Length: 212
Image 1 (cartoon, helix red, strand yellow):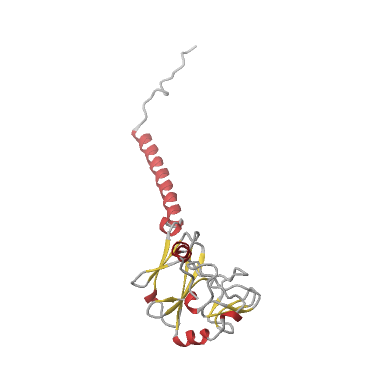
Image 2 (image 1 turned 90 degrees about the vertical axis):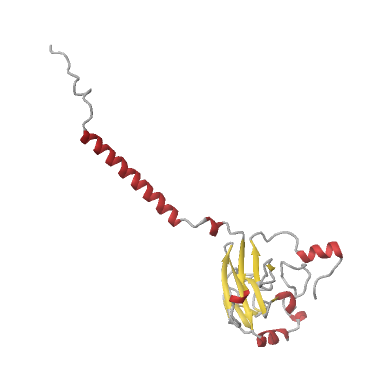
């Protein structure tokens, strides 16, 4: 019986074998890198996901127009009111509105829904609102309805230019987010909206009252 010949097992790999293996390996790396790069391209950037604040330059909002921003998964309305709109909406008696409260996160809960408490002043009058109907969680339609502000098709609510409800199934005014306004007219809406408002803090510390 002839001895077993294992010379083929111990035979060194040829140059062609080495090039074949190397080429396949590089191909796998290239495909993997392509998939990883595609995944990164399809994913939102960290700046979008974890933006700590919304910055709006009020000078970029024309008179009579509105800008809508998406922030923290919710729309924010910034509207630059005309003088006629302010005069017309100011004629309504706050005490006769369905919701006489400001619903303003910057003020005490008992603050009234007056013009001052529902607007922002900087070389003009602006309305800054969470763009969501308090009742139906729909996005109200701009410049429609019976009072020149917004109309919510979910509950049929009509809001004026200050975001105050006048009729419909919603019984609450559109809410105003917590914000800060710089001397240059840049509005900053922070992601963290909880906690005590600055006016409430002032009232507790200094005994000042909410604006009427």
